[in-house]
Image 1: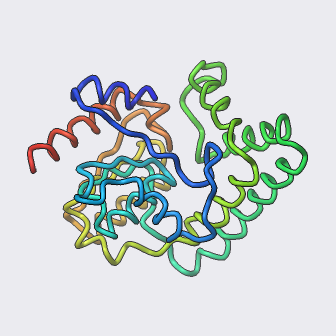
Image 2 (image 1 turned 45 degrees about the vertical axis):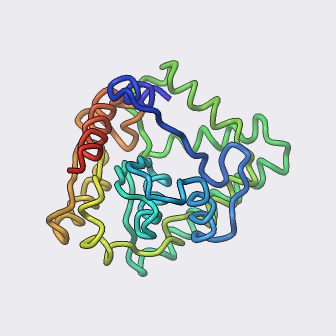
Length: 239
């Protein structure tokens, strides 16, 4: 991963990537807490991990681990802390519709069918990238996603939807000193979400990455790597 490579280079540290449930052939539990159990089992049991970074679904999962106390510090990229109950039904229906598409692709044998669903997923307005469609990094990411299994992605869409996770917003006053929230400047709905969190919890650190949409790992890898490296230095110094 280009961002992880830059951070490791700039900090002289080693970073370990965790595979999210439902991705890269990893089975997905039937519920949110089961997924957290699966991820927590990969973290050191004797002490909380010093700094864990997560993007999107990964950010939500890391927030859940932080709430459990198994993560000492977290940098959360393009994540959500929760949603109002009035929003859950619509989001659940939307995510289940994607799950059904992934399942149909899986039943047809994957391949071109799965690639078509993944292409539609990437073309959602919220995921729009600043990179040109011909950019090699976009193609590398798409090829990597195409190795996933459609039935497991479907399970992840159902079990790990933001509609299925707890609302962690009431816990943010206690968690804020251990968090760093990051959003892309062009990702307007997530910027608004982050600002609403900080309006409720003034101590929550928020960074807005310029020239980036929902995925700063893609749109602004150098800027994001610098943010992560700086957070790692602060964490290592006990700040």
